[in-house]
Image 1 (tube, rainbow, N blue to C red):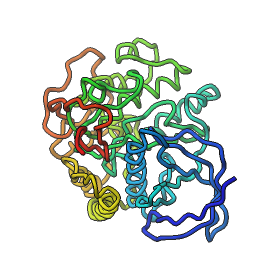
Image 2 (image 1 turned 90 degrees about the horizontal axis):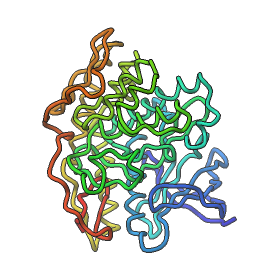
Image 3 (image 1 turned 45 degrees about the vertical axis):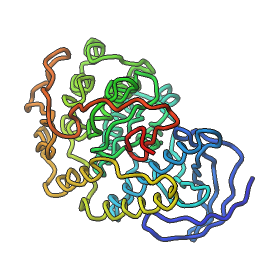
Image 4 (image 1 turned 60 degrees about the horizontal axis):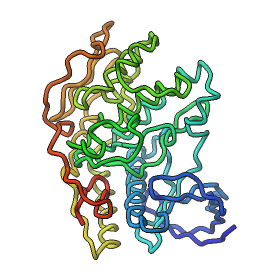
Length: 385
């Protein structure tokens, strides 16, 4: 057990100091990150948390960037949730010190187990509850303009009632140029793979992996390679028929909120979410801190950094659509995946949507650079220093 005095910033901006007891055990964390269980003594008593830091070794610089992603996503989710309550489906940032010599993030202790283990104990009721809970978490991420880009059986946890999306280390803001994501191809769509990466991050980037994961949980650990395989699986359920579209090219996929509407639910955007101003202010403060920490290698803002704010403002300016009614198209984006009332999505193998403007339009592939030169501070183009 290691005793350490932590000075960190709460998500609301308040700075505080707390005594912490760090355990020696290391826990799974994001790419190039390590986590430790930690007991933190605050004004309301002791709380168990997870302390995330960059892993030591030659990839430490990339670990700092992954940690930056986790902190920025956590801050934006906290700002969007406000006083209405933090969403149960996404890991909660409790505090961070982004500008320290050895920066770290404090997360609330994760609930349940990774789905890679949890599926073995899931019953029929849990199989029905899991898809909506996972999609609700993705809707919250989309509401703050973030694509997770690492959805899979290790990053999504299950506690018997709700999914928990963890590990924001490879996340990117909407409108940023896509960069390659490491991982097994079953969980990484073509537009995010090394050698075929293209286009700009948008609200459909996580749907491929989400559909894989929903099938994975329902089919007891089996992976699904295509919409045709999903369609021929014998699962006669409206959701699974809709999920066959998740394996389309990115511009033709549904978003998480559109799938929720197809399930008969309402778009679960954060209650009282006011969009751009607070998110922009919080992001600017974060980027200022990053500039201080990386004075020797200043990081230019990624292209389309503020594109997501317009999308978020659109969420807060209109009431949620009624069940079974297609949502309005996203500004400057591809047409929304819509299923006519009582209808079905086209079968796998049908025509895909044509080229569209906006963040899902395929752009020229990013130039390939040696791994040591890649920078991915929230979607920064690889090869920039």
